[in-house]
Image (cartoon, rainbow, N blue to C red; front, side, top):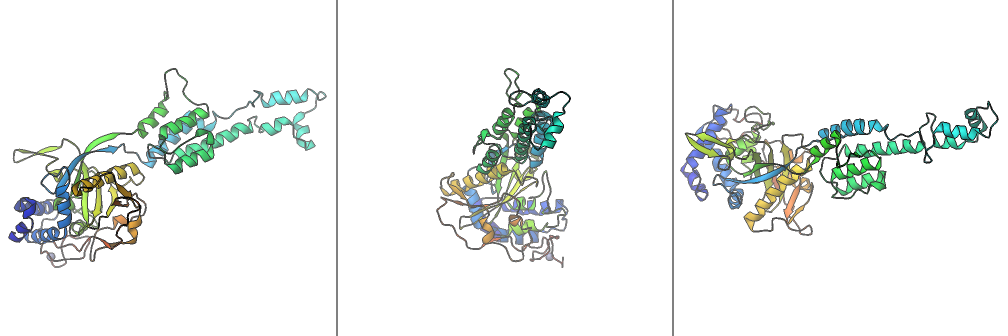
Length: 442
Ligand SMILES: [Zn+2]
């Protein structure tokens, strides 16, 4: 205990309380055999490995004295590809467009129908002659047949309907509130009159599609009067809810990283990768970040404890593991709960909060970061004996590597090690089981 206390003296935290909390957190969460001995071994190794990250977090704005930086954050409205797809298809395509049938027309540009055309073409014919059969047998197409399908609908309007359907299909997959350059190009390739542009609000672009096909709500004073458009705008609108965001190297947060309004395989109560929590705690690079409700508070021994001071006591809404090293490389792993893979806005907001906190801790410009996408795959490896799930290498999510500075600045491609062999919660020896928090001998 004394050695641990002197190792952590610079943090001013209550080391005895931390040892006690750590052991109790394990015991209360289905690991009753946890011992103080196992805790002290783990915490000494954590203090050694995390020295750099602990000092970084202590320099961040919002540092709460408990190895956590806490700040308000606005989380964009949650929406999944599924929500958007349902709203655009069911509400807008099926209802507003009536599956495209509202675009189909039986009148050509001159306002004439197939039978108008047949009648006028028949005027020059002798009585009792069937124009339809003459046209189809003579090999010479009457004007009526180049403009109308057999069912009397103009080819022009069928083409328009197909075009509208292709456009709607594009919007079914757009989750972001504003278009990126690829989405804008895709829309313009189908119909250049829409004039979609990068950065345009997604709802505005769809509004232009609706207007182009003559389906806008013409009620005076109403822009999006129709209920289904209103639903879409509600779903896609900017803004969101404000939560407290926590950047932590506190050991309790590693243990509880998957206890919140979701669970994952890193749940110490029974997850298949439960010892991965300690694996992350004992490496040099992993920080746990998460959000909790603002204004949270609870009573401990008749003392009110706020979410800002002790966020680890409150239920996590989102959790995102980040990896930051002394070579100044930041890797963003996957956001939990899962199902947010398409929510690039959410990934971006969490990443920006971490980037700006790191910058302010080091006296750098918080806005000046460069996104290197998935380049980290080239040099990131799992630590020897680590038992954490290699979430950062999961292909279908928006995690990435970013570095402080400009795109032209060089960055290190030295090995980036994530995870370490976990220690047994009973005896403190290293072990290799991902499903257990203790070794085979205990
Ligand atoms: Zn053991």
